[in-house]
Every structure is written in C-alpha cells, then in structure tokens.
Image (cartoon, rainbow, N blue to C red; front, side, top):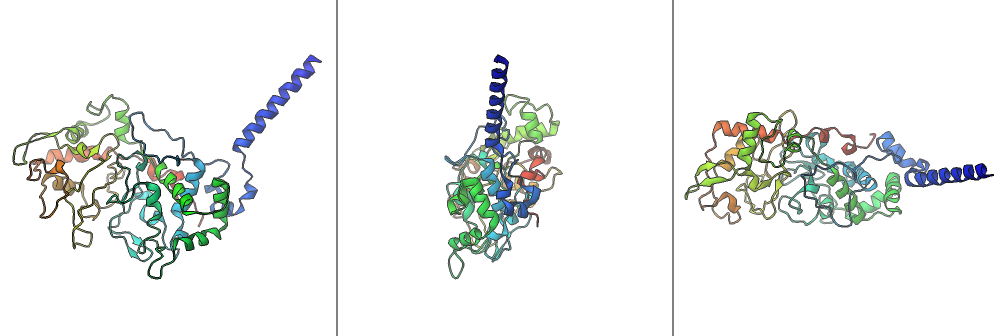
Amino acid sequence: MKSIKFISSFIIIIVLFSCSKSDATYVDVSNYPNVKAAFGTKIDLENLFDYAGQTVPSYITKDNTTPGNSITNKGATLGRVLFYDKNLSYNNSVSCSSCHQQANAFGDVALASSGANGTTERHSMRLINTRFASEFKFFWDERVSSLEMQTSMPIKNHEEMGYSGLNGDASFSDLITKLSAIGYYKELFKFVYGTDEITESKMQMALAQFVKSIQSFDSKYDAGRIQVTTDSETFPNFTNEENQGKNLFLTSTVFDNTGNRISGGLACAQCHKVPEFDIMVNSHNNGVIVNMNGTGVDLNITRAPTLRNLVKPNGTLNGPMMHSGVFTTLEQVIAHYGNITVAPGNTNLDQKLNQTGNGQQLHVTPTEVNSVIAFIKTLSGTAVYTDSKWSNPFLN
C-alpha cells in the first residue's frame, strides 16, 4: 500500500509540474491562423525570439526603459510586425523599416529617405542601442521625451507615412480602423494584450519595445573592454593604432587662450561618453546647422545616434552623417571638429567646442586621423545586421 501511495503521489507531482509548464509555454496555434498565414515559421508563437533576456555587459550602466513598458518577448514580437508593415502608411508604400534598414544598422544610406508623400527633411538616424542612450529624448531636435511618443510621429507625418489628419490626409483613427480589419493584428493584439482592441498607446509600447531590443555589444571594442577594468587601460586585443585612437578619443585637450590645441587628445568622449558612445545629455549643436536642402539654418540639432555601428564590419559607412548628411567620410567629420568656425548667429553652439570663444582648432595630424578612425571601426558589431529577431517577419 505504501508503494502504491508513493507512486500515486509521484504521478500527481509529475502531472502538476507538467500542467504548470504547459500553462507557461503552450500556445494553441490553431487560434492564430492569420499569424501563421502571414509569417509562417518566421514567427513561432510557441517559441518567441528572446528580446527580454538578452545579455548586457556589466560595464553598460545606462537603461532608459520607460516605466511600465519593459521589453517583453510578446510585445517586441508585435513591435517587429508593426515596424516592418507597410500597412502603416496610407498607401501601403513604406514602413518604419523603409527608412531604418537592418542592413545599414537600422539607418539609411540615402541622404533623404523616401516616404509615402515625398522625402524626409532630415537624414534618417540609426536605431542602435537606443535603450542604453544617455539622452532619453528623441529626434535630431529632441522634440519628444520618450521613444514611445516618437514611434507614432512618423506615421502622423504627411511626407513620411501620411496619416497626419491634415489637409485631406487620413487620420490616425483611420489607420486603427484599417489595422483592426487585418486578421493577424486582431490575433497578435489579443496574444499580447488579452484583447484585440488596437490603440495608439498599445502600438507605441510594442514599437518601442522592439526598437529598444535592437542592441549591439559584440564588437572588437566590447571584446577588449570586458578584459580590462577601465577604458583608459590598453586593450589587449587592439592594435597599437587602435589603442592610440582610443587614447585620443578619451583624453582631454589642452588649448591655448586662442582655442588652439597645444597638447592632449581630441576629447571626443566629452560628447560621446564611453562605453555607450551616445550623445551626452544637455549637449548643444555641433556647428552643423545648415538644413539638408542647403537653405536656412537650424540651431536646435542637439541629438545624435550612438557611434556604435557608424560603419559596417567591413569598414564601409552606414550612410552619410549628421542630420543633413553633409559628411560622407570619417575624415570629413574629424576635419569639421578639428576646425570649428562659429557661424554668425549660432547662439546654441556647444561650449565644449568653443571653450575659449574662438572655436576649437585641434590641428589633427594624418597619423591621429587614421588612429581615431581605426578606433571608431572597433565599435561595430556583426549580429545586428543578420539576427533574425530583428529581420522582416513577413513571408511576402
């Protein structure tokens, strides 16, 4: 009898454990036929990609996750669909991914990106490591205070995706009506939120989760940084040129009273702090103030993407640089910072570039230029360009 009771108890434990595990992981895919039809094996609701549990190096301290909207595998999966879906434009011609392409570190090699009704007014910013940015505001002019708010603004822009609700454009509520009639959205919103009701807030949260999941920490820099205690130490996996470039990037500049560099490094880290390499909070403009069309000025361009994956692993650029795309080589960028001219009327130039009131003159040598470029190239990873969890999920 004792043996029978023991066996019975053991069976009960197994059954309870199996039920618990099943409740946590099992998804009846027969309830999601439209998801299967649209995405096939690219989205497996029983085995979602791991967006929430990605490894973050211990030396990365920034995390600008919005309270109440932490990354989840379900939410980021929905965000991935929204990100790649051309249905989010009024004429089904473009998606978020049209301007932010995985092959280009979620940026665009074109000077101006093509939208539903024209082209963008500024060069499309790369979307790498936005969750780990020092600055939590978004757009080149920092006009919104969270990524959630940012995600729906291109949809509401006439040139970009066309749901502005102005001058004859359809409205965002028209978009919601459109998406509500699409079978895979009815299923996915219910899968994520428990109800198939689509709202702007839910779309914003899902899109933000997906974008914040796009991270890159598999670069040569990261392989070296994990082996040392501080960035100022020599990285054992770097060449002499790369270590020299790192030192120039990190080391403060010593100026004379007319703004000429007389010793020290280039102090790039004053604005692009390691190890995130994002723009520092409360930065002002960098002296590039001309609009992309070459007319007028904009003094409020104070945001910039991280320097990570500025170039591809093969060393080619992921597109032109600055909001106006005015620079197409790293040599041009270094030359700009090496010779800052204070334009008349530029009252918002970052003081770090104008410490003596004359505009910095770094007198960078060719050897120093090559060293800094060599270091910047170490900041590029590889997985972000190929990882399926950030790829287009649609079959067609």
